[in-house]
Image 1 (cartoon, one colour):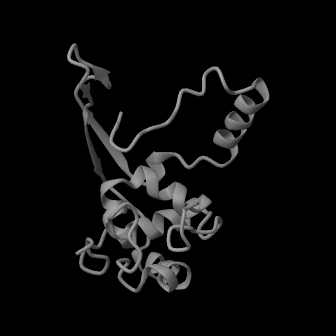
Image 2: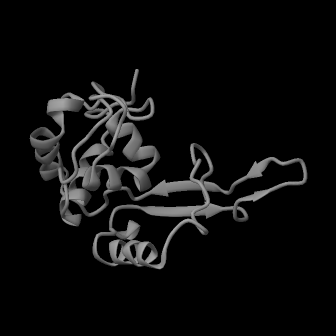
Length: 156
């Protein structure tokens, strides 16, 4: 639904049956349902390429990010697990040019995966170890905290 920055290759002929089942196992056992963390409204048709070769995508609107979470606990999780690298306000290490809070507010669908499974990068500032936050309730609390743009502002 969102083609920006999406350069995934076509794996349909490259994955074995065992690898496909490993993906299914991951989704059944480790996946966090987006409805637990945020809501998404999609306006427009699915992604398609028009006659001129231009990719046309629907408009995605994320809302209700972290609703029902405990922002105070989320702040505590952030301080204990994230602030050492990303800074007290989430702007010390940018992710794709965005602060931590900014990315949660703009692309919550990407952030839960980074928080739970880490981020492999080309430099030490791009690398984040997995397992920093794993429980869906802690992810929800962290999302609730990071929606506060005053405490976790956008990148300057």
